[in-house]
Length: 196
Image 1 (cartoon, rainbow, N blue to C red):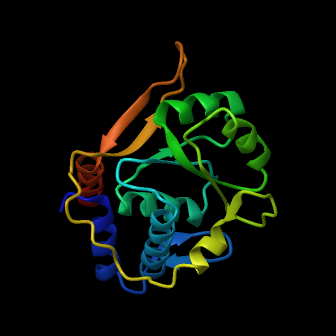
Image 2: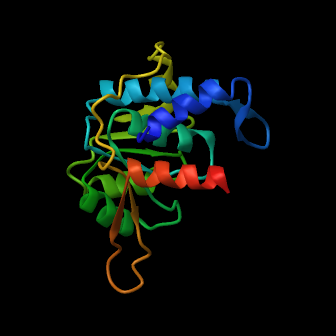
């Protein structure tokens, strides 16, 4: 199996009832994670995100980061995670370079994201994890609640060599460069870690 989403589906089936994610105040089981990923993937698809599109993730370490990441993967999109400490100008460069269509962020980071969005013509959707009352910005919870179907998606036809994530370098010598990793790269990494 050379597909990152199918790796999650297999893990959820093999680890029923086991915790996949831990936070200070809760744990998320593999089944709950997969159901949330499926709902978010359907939300992205309803928003027009298609195979090959870029979904930017500007979140701290939280379960929604994982849900956003795998949700994008499930629709065949490429994830573009970025450090929440980056300045709007740095985000503009990364999001223009990757042609990001959606960004998932937090209320605290929203002002900088909206500043950057004005300079990124491809960026059509901003999703906020947490309370939001800004016009033109979607709530992560509302998008999830609008998607009752929690069943796995059909991801047949995803090429194992398609880019699944674009991680930008620190740019110590000039502009950051986008390093593309494929399904095959990441599944291979998972397999190697599992054997270690």
